[in-house]
Image (cartoon, rainbow, N blue to C red):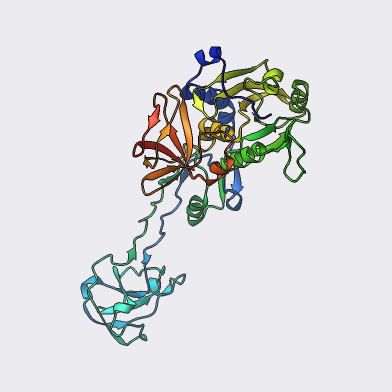
Length: 411
């Protein structure tokens, strides 16, 4: 149910919880579940590991590169024997080590070598073919004149990237393209990963219509459900999206009673000060409803709810879409995927902020500066979609002037 108001009562203002305190409360609620998932890893094929969270440290089973190899197409030489004319010996191609492993040739020799090919033990440098005279590969037995080449020139030394026995990835990191490339380069066909957190996303509200259905007067499309499902999946969770069939306390409890096999329930809307706050009315037992010193995202709920399979943690986010996503970014995502990259940037225009709240604005950043995108309103989805960062204005700051330095979280 989309919240009618995010303005707490006077009593709620007196009891407002800090952002840090609420983050700690959410962490304490979810820690037992996350620790259980971390204790029960399973191996998956590398091809299925994208986006998963690594369950154990990965120790390199071999060096990278596993052998010294050429950084470019050229001639493998003894650095002490150039500059000068040398005699060409058998070519060394990438993936074919026979010539590299052959007995060392006599003094004054050079072997044509291709990029990535194994450097023979007798050579310690590579001269690019374009630096030779003539500037091309010549046949075995012919002479070529090469310039000076210091030892190590254009050589990728064995273990220069990774040394065998070292920890290359820590438990808890998410596996993206670069990390999967590293695991593949180390020859690891399977990866130990944590089971994903299974989350039910519950959209409440009589006004909600699923995308693709014609709107009638007073109705809106449900953006919170798809948004949070995507955000959770990006953070490595497995998502079951559910919409309450009836916007009533009884309908909400009925929808929850049918859920099973999930570790967490996240709802949107129905937790503020309006007259039809269905989550607040339906989950008064076991769930705490608080006001957090955050804008947007002040109303929050947390506790446990009873499902078909027993009690599980519950988080209630506000119904306005920007409030809902900011709540996720502030309180839930860090537990699943770690902190967002954070930088300091110069504000391109001034902004007001309530002194008693931590305000989070949307922005576009670049070249050390950040421009606010849209206003502070919690319904401005278009501005949210244009943003590539979150701009943080902390408690106690009433005005950030043009040119002020602010903290920015990169999305």
